[in-house]
Image (tube, rainbow, N blue to C red; front, side, top):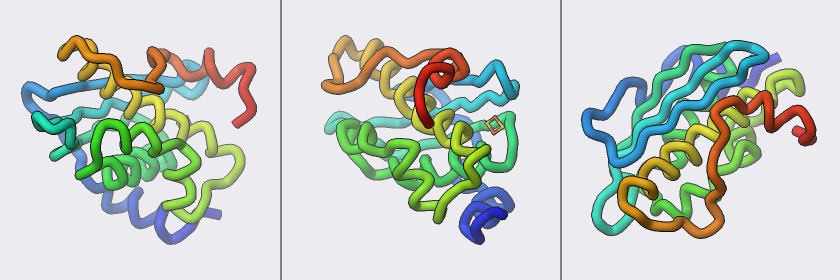
Length: 145
Ligand code: FES
């Protein structure tokens, strides 16, 4: 039911942990399933994400998608990181079962939340970044995913 890549990232998640004094940190959850994901970014003066760590209290797919999401944003600019959507994460994992698609939304929203925090701290506006929600269950109610 899960791809080999999902199993690999679930069994050996990359970039687990925390960053002290992060440039940006974002926490999102889904009240429906109770899963929570937190992402920490270390961003340099050029706006490049030089390090990223995550902590996920959630299902296997949430762990695998957060792990893959951190791999995808590492080394990217803030702008490029915005392009790491849940679809991009799912593709990189060779897909997720339909009932687990919402788990990948948590990863996308956690990236946005960490970027939002970074923007707030630095008083900048990241074009195309909308204020993230804390609970993606509110968002996914009326959205197709
Ligand atoms: Fe909710 Fe996976 S079941 S994030």
